[in-house]
Amino acid sequence: MTLHKEGRKILFFSLIIFIGIFFLFEYVLNTPQWVNDGILIILIVVYLLILQFFRNPKFIINKNDKHVLAPADGKVVVIENTEETEYFNEKRKQISIFMSPVNVHVNRSPISGVVKFCKYHAGKYLVAWHPKSSTENERTTIVVENGSGIEVLFRQIAGAMARRIKWYVNEGDVVEQGGEFGFIKFGSRVDIYLPLDAEVKVNIGDKTKGGRTVIAELKS
Image (cartoon, rainbow, N blue to C red):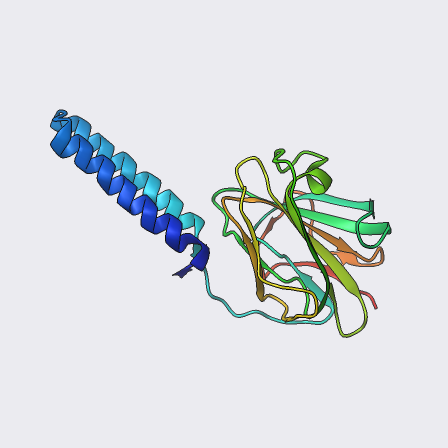
């Protein structure tokens, strides 16, 4: 287990602030020792919670051109056929994965291929499960075309807590299945849009592991 680069500054400055708070209570305010002990415990617990937000597990990725891997840890909250209006402008099979604050927040490419489209949208911060969050929240849209010419769209969506989306790819880049393409701080949601003939391998409520769980199989 390693720590993700997105957490380094937050963890460093959080540590400085927490140490400052502890010294304030311990040496300046002259509060009772039981209060100081309680403050210390609270600070340690909060810091450990922040620390776990930025964990980045290492594992072997089993690549398969037919498989679509989960782009994130989380829970499947949507499986439906819907109109995708930003890039395809036609019906697609949508799978949405909700990332809670306790999930790993690294986002991974569902397939290997070339990035055909990449766009960032500033927006609102509706709760991630809101029906309009996919089109109105802060988000990035990325489309990857595999070697067979099949395009898969995946979208990082910010939520009420998650207000920092990071992405590391641009149009023309080559990405590997399971490779890291971005990060959403403190949880949110990722939508995946697949061809209508893709065979979904998960159900509503299933837990996913980014880069490991097969969420669908491509037919062509």
